[in-house]
Amino acid sequence: MTGTLKGPTDHVVVVGAGLAGLSAALHLLGAGRRVTVVERDSGPGGRAGRLVRGGYHIDTGPTVLTMPEIADEAFAAVGSSLRDRVELVPLHPAYRACFADGGTLDVHTDADAMEAEVERFAGPAEAAGYRRLRHWLTELYRAERHRFLDADFDSPRQLIGPGLLRLALLGGFGRWETEIARHLRDERLRRVFTFQSLYAGVPPARALAAYAVIAYMDTVAGVHFPRGGMYALPRAMAETAEAAGAVFHYGRPVTRLERTGDRITAVITGEERIPCDCVVLTPDLPVAYGLLGRTPRRPVRLRYAPSAVVLHAGCDRTWPHLAHHTLSFGHAWRRTFDELTRTGELMRDPSLLITRPTATDPALAPPGRHLHYVLAPCPHTGIGPGPADWHSLGPRYRDELLRVLDRRGMGGIASAIEEECLVTPADWTARGHAAGTPFSAAHTFAQTGPFRPRNLVRGTANAVLAGCGTTPGVGVPPVLLSGKLAAARITGSARTTASPGRNPRPHPQGACP
Image (cartoon, rainbow, N blue to C red; front, top):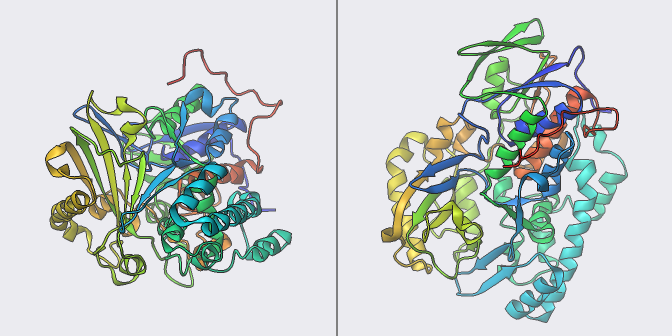
């Protein structure tokens, strides 16, 4: 049994209205708590924010939504439903992979469609290997979902049990790349099922195979897109929480936490003092530790995941080979991970994620226009260029990215851009993200499960952390789970969904976005 907060927990202040904070708020409301959410920005979303420029509606954070049922758990906590609030569009294909040799592969969620596509791309033997791989990924997810992903840890001893044995038998403690190679011989195919390790912050040759569960989320469970853009999710969560009784204070950065002994008694913004019984902190770890006035000791210093340069480009045209999500791979692969995680160099032969949200929702751009999001992984500021360097490096790297895209089938993109926004590690640093990365602490073995920074901090009796730096980790589904787990630390229940004994405030008719 994991530990829960002691003392009164009637009024909870959640610091941050990103996905973690909104998830925590909804689960707390469902458990009968009074909730106040304090957010420094002018609206909800946090990293999953929204920028409107020249008629283009730009998602500033994640573009890939998997496992929507995890988001639905938060809505269900107050008697609502994700699909009542947000129109989800399944993406077919989930991705299109474009390789340096000219080959393309559409990544389908449907098993038969994907098997046929793999056979077309690489032959019948690889198609049979894909079937075996799909089964292994599914079993891996079943072994991890409730025992490891949706679980708080107070001690490594909590790992011991049948679940750990099951994960070991599945090869979860081997190496991600090695396990994928057991099923697929084609190096290009292996990339499709291992590129996700970038977001875990560890090269696939060194990452735990247990993290291949991210590939399950992408390639088996499927990818969705909310009508209105990814921002539709945090907006709907905030509206649902407000309808259930939460009070939101936007534009109020938290300056300090008032303490009496080991308890937080109030959250202080520049304008007000908000008394509380306990607090959920969702900023990145250094910011949260700074507010608490203490940083937990670790045997070794935290290691951070690579960062990213993101170019948002509103264009007067698009390119027919682009799907909603397109993976554009260079020739280099192992060298690319070496550059990103060891030497701190910019990718010489980059692999890129290109998202075209207007392929699914044209209303995100002016009529006849198209929105493109280009994500180029780069080293974090601890091993690569520092924030100050990026102020001058950013425009030059933007031009280089456009030249790469031009060579890879997006001819004339530089002249097609009408509106743009370039985001570099300097911008992530300015937002308070450690090491200039939005992907926080890497998922090394020493930063996994019970070894990851805990959501409880020694010396503070009534504060809980949530977000990608703590349990369970990086990505939209884990971040939503982190909010649920933070709520469980307060309510004492791993299941904070509404029960017949609780009656959250009903939603008014017509409140859907």
